Each structure stands twice: as C-alpha cells, then as structure tokens.
Image (cartoon, rainbow, N blue to C red; front, side, top):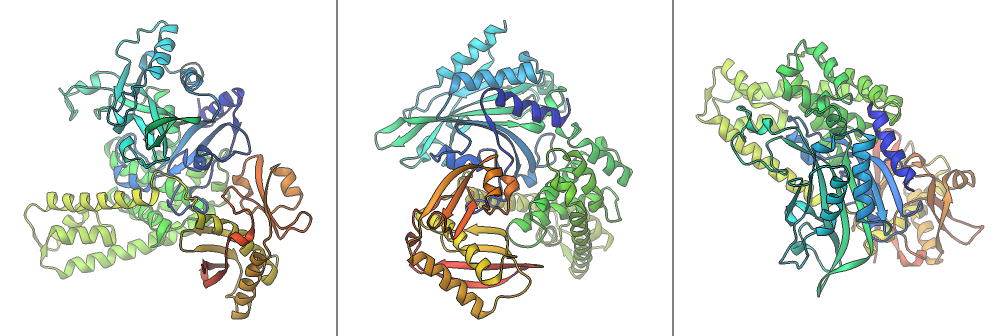
Length: 607
C-alpha cells in the first residue's frame, strides 16, 4: 500500500462512518500567538473541542501536516521526525468510547491489515489525588474486541497513570485550572518482538520490558483521547458534551504495515535517502544519523517554505535556517562538498505531489532560496575557522560557541583544532555534551512556553483584534486600492500584525486615512454576523478568501455591516465580537517592509 493509498483509505473509512473530510491546516497557525507552528493534529480543532460549532458538523476527519521544532535534537533514531502527518478523527459531542475504539481497531486490522496479535493497548489507571477513577470502560471495550477475534487478551492491556494516559492543556489533573476540560486516553502500540529487548547491542538488554518502555520493541501508532471531564471546585465532573480526539502517526503506521521499525525506509523517505546516497557515495546503513537528519530536515524546511516560512533569524524563520544548516553540516560529514540541499526539493515534491501539490508548484522558488542559504552558511563556516585559528586552547566553551554560532559539529571542530595544532581541553567531549544538553532543554522549555498544549488564545483582547483584522483589510483596500491582498497575520494581547501586498511604503497621509476609517466604522457600531455556507457559493457571491484552499467545503463567513451594505465579508475561523463598537479605538503603531512586494503594519488598542 502506497502512502497516498493509506491516507485515502483512512479518510474514506471515517467518511463512511459519517465524518466530514477537512483539508490540512497550514504549518503556521493563523492568528494564534501561543505557538509558532502547528505541532499536532488536534491543534486546529481546539476551538471546536472547547465548544465552538464546526461548520461541517460533529464528526470530522483529516490528515494534518505537523512540525515540532522541539524534536530537532531528537532526529537520528528510527522513529523521530520534525515533520510528520497526523491522521485524526474527532467526535464533537457525538459518539464516544465504544464507537471510537472499535472503529480504530477495525481500521488498523481490517483496512490496513495489521496482525491483531501484534497490537497492545494502554489505558488510564486512575488518579486518587484527583479523584478520577481507573478507565475500566475502555478496558472492557478492548477486551471484547480481542475476544471477538479469538485473541487471548491477557497481558495485552496495561494501565498507566496521569503522566502517560491523561490529556489536558495543562498536563496532569492536579495542574489543571478550574473550568479546564480533560480526560483519559488509550494508546495503541505495535510489537516488533521480544528478541529486540534481549539483543546484546540493546542498552536495555536484561531490563524488564513493558509496553511504554524505551527499548524499541513497542512503537506507539495511535492515541484516542476521551475528553470527558471538567475541573470544578468540587472536583472533576462529567462534561455535558464529551469529545473524542484521535491522533494516528501516518509515517509509523506506514512502517509497521511492513513490520518495519525504521520510518526512514518507507516510501516517504526512501527516494530522498537514495538521492543522498548518490550525492555522497555513502550508504544509508553506514551513516544512519547523517542520512536521517538530512532527509527529515530538508523535508520539513521544504514544507515550511511552501507555507511561507524561509530561513532567517526570527521566529519561524530561525527554525527553517536551523534545519537547512544542520543538513549542510551533516552533508559535509558525508563528504558532500558541493551545494546539494536544493537538489533534494524536487524529490520531496514528487513524493507528496497528489496530497500537497503546492510543493511542486513552488519548487523552483524554494530551490533558489535554499541555494542562497547554503552559500551563506558555507561563508559562516569560513568565519568559524578564522575564529578557531585565533585561540590557543580548544575548550568546551569554544566548541559550543562554534556549534551554536556557525553550526560546527564537535567532530568538525576537533578535527580542525587538531589540524591547527591547538591544545585540547581535557574531557572536552563530555563537557560539550553537557552544554548542548542544557541548551536543548532551554529550547524545549521555550517551545513549551510558546505552545502551551497547542491551544489558541480566545481572550477578550485577541477576539477584538480578530475582528479588527477584517476592518484593517477593508480600510487598506479602500485607501490603497483593490490590489491589496492579505499575506499573513499574527495576533497577541498587545497588538495585531498584518502583512499585505503593496509595492511601496505607505505615506503618513495614507496611514492616517486608514486609521481614521477603521475608527469611524468602530464608532458606527457596525453589526458582525456569522453564516455557514458552501465554500463555492461563498466565493461566487464575492466573499473574500486569500487562503481559500485551507478551508473545508462548508465554511464560516463573517460579515461586518448591515445586510446588503457590508463593509467586509470574509471566510474566517477565529472568534469575533458581535458589534464593532466592542473593539474600541485603534491606532497604527508602525508600518514597514516585510519582504519584496509585501508590507507589514502593526495595530494597537488605545483602551
């Protein structure tokens, strides 16, 4: 089964069970200040899990592309990648555990063809401190499914605590604030066989193996979250509308279909691996770390570029730059002297041609940008060598500075230091590793702070900015002309940032006119209304949508102004005020260039 066939089989299986298929959201969340990237399948669904009505109903299914910046340092084993797809299905107050567990099990066994003898399950073991019981209901459902297929369920279901089998935005139950929803989950693992744990090369050889251990024998391939509770002053109570959130690892399921532990040997990576073998003259099996890093990182950077993220030193662009430069570093380790990053882009685009044609459509642009970035980095390497030549003793601090500033791996720094005849600090390897580990932990903490569980912030202030975005776009088009199109936006508690197509800087008179127009509309208390429509009909009626491809076939249309005399009509999924007067007076903070042909304007609230 090809990757495209697996993805389609999953979507169509749940479509037959009444689910509406929605397209993947972009890797950069729109108007979500809590995270830099879409890092999970549930992230775009959070408003609906928290109570908003989805325009397509209560049963949703998709395959969501994801990027996890905090996993960059983890790439190198047989299962971690920074870019991945998450197969997801949701029940928004509709079906619950019985249907979900049976459907997922049926899909994996009957549709995908996994051996049911290879599947093991984990369930929530309860939390006495929180007063939440053991999930025996999920256990009973699994027991019946195993017995139905004449499989002895003994030893197939394991229970773990809140740190393993509980989901909420805040983590374990005791950390959840009042009013916060959460619930237990049930994970599905694939068993590669007990001989893996006993292999003499395994670091876990001789240790007790269990489903959720790290020996490599078991691989998690799916997780059903049962959002059943809300935290109150009296403890956890049942939610009125219980939700299901399932996430299945697309790459992992594809691998275990062939009883394959290594996701890099699937069709999603093998064409890239083969090309790196041709470029380097080296074999994958002899250089696992380098091949895995390069193939994952350039794939992730290519997907980010297709969604408008290119290498630079700020926010999302910092991670794109890091991906490309780490790949160049590992390419040098493989002996690839010439520029090679751009050559991988068409191969990646061809793998995803049917599902994500935007990669192929933009491949020449992406290649050019990667070529420039690779040249920049190689110049940085030259600077790093000059810095290295100036010092007398090569210390762990020096090594880490070269690693962080110029992207030098320790091996390259050591090799060059020895070649230059530098004195090497004793114990440098372990000291360098400690410094890098501390830096990685700091990065993960920062990422967690940005992500906070992947939930969009719908505060009163950000809701005002969501509606102000529509007024800003309407005012810009009125003052500057209809050629103005939205190119991106970002909202925080402190300001609204809006990117738009325009070839020059705005004059002071134009900025004043835009500001006055928005405030006039706000003072007029223009009504804000929402309507569910078919996307084709909405677009045909003149509704604006500059990112129309990301929206499903049925959409939410937000209109500002009285019927028949609208100031603005746009497709949008964010929260909005009911009347423009609720926004309050705005002011333009600044306006500047964002990139060639794109301007960036910042708006603040005076009150």
